Image (cartoon, rainbow, N blue to C red; front, side, top):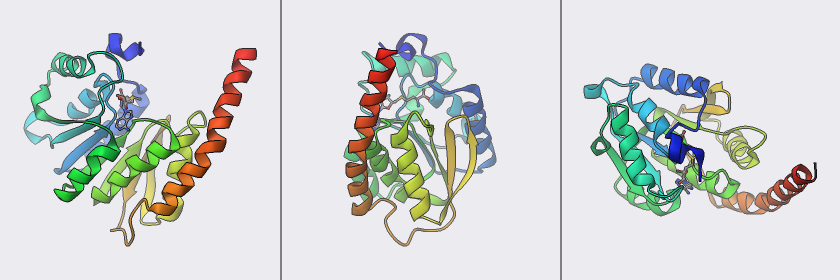
Length: 218
Ligand SMILES: C[S@@+](CC[C@H](N)C(=O)[O-])C[C@H]1O[C@@H](n2cnc3c(N)ncnc32)[C@H](O)[C@@H]1O
């Protein structure tokens, strides 16, 4: 069982929450906010509480809700515990891959995104496809941008290298914040990125297994 299933805590540090709150307070954003991967909703609650109730933009959560038993009920209770109501959140149950087409065809836009779902490279690359719905001046944050999570590092580094109209604006612990400075002239994540992710995933999986073996042997 994931610890957050019983503690209801956020899977982020205080410094990471501090950065999220600073970005949300300074952003002057009114369009939707997205969290990819909410676990027990601890960070969702912290982000929502960065806004005064009447001034809070629509929060959208994309999550398959199978991280631990009764995840949807626990998220709802956790929001209540933080003085919030789940009715104010647009919960979309499924993966980012499954749910992007509907959001894109409805021409939904976002001012802020937090990506903290599955940290495998292919998944992070899929999550980053949502940035095509990010408004200019909006910010996407990714959690676990750290050597332990090479999937996140590889996806983010490639994204930043290929898209000069996005720039890193801040970091706290393993949270990285990236701003969309101009409209993209090409899709943020295209077929070459997907192929890169598939091919690069093989050595990353071997590396993960090797590190696990070394840890178990020690
Ligand atoms: C690391 S936890 C999120 C932690 C949370 N953001 C916090 O700070 O407390 C990962 C979450 O991502 C969700 N998830 C896994 N794969 C996903 C995907 N492909 N799309 C969206 N969410 C995903 C899991 O169900 C889980 O709730």
